[in-house]
Image (cartoon, rainbow, N blue to C red; front, side, top):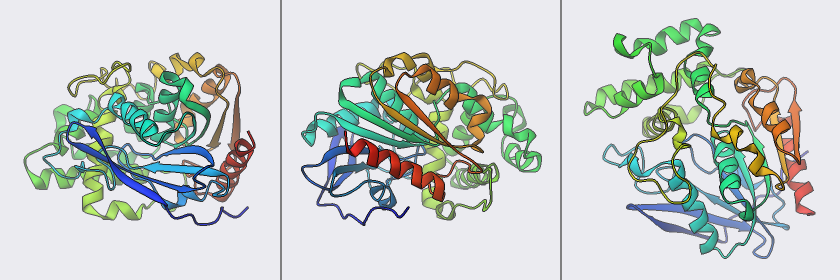
Length: 340
């Protein structure tokens, strides 16, 4: 199935969200259409024009944004002086609500990939009246167990790459919270230490891809690489800040207790715990059968705990929304909800 036609933004801007941050947003498609919000992955990636083509531009009013510190938003996480303490999940949730009100939207379909699925799920749990449907792919829940799996547990399957990944850390830090340890390197005053840590982090992320090609062109950009690694380790090393208050933005840059690097066995986390709060919100989960996160059964447990959700499993695909069969399933989902 082909993607929907190209749709250029008819409106865009920089939203002042406070804390010295301005978030880039854009809107394309039908100005009077069904509102849809797109949440990119990472944490630390950016919105892609490809996302627009998953929605019929004659039917949808498609809203994309670059989350705090990402892409065209300012200040960028790739700038060493940027304050990361005001980049947490409660801050991002507040930003989404500010943007929704700025655009005069009552309810919108929320589409999310990878980290965007975590953010979308938490947004729907904390602001259910603002979400008409969810379409999620590369589904994750932001749990400590997932972080432990992705930073240590998969070392059993990729031992050579894992050895290189650990080698960048001081010996005293290799048995603890790997994401937090890498984040400390990425906050080093020594630019060379930061650059080496960013390279090692993205090398590990590409090494654990379920299927070749194991390369990500944007990781070859040292500016993107540093901002991405700094942001993802900030979130992964602090429990994705999911334990912080959600009624108001939590102060400071603390967070959850961090990932207990136990190889992938641990607390199910906040999103699964609160799955019942999704009752009444229709949703489609599109998941590759070879996605590494499936080793914990998160997407199956979420589906069974969420009345009204649909799970579409795509064989022989990993964590890749762009795979042809994944793309078709995502198009089917947005087309289905367009009729609602």
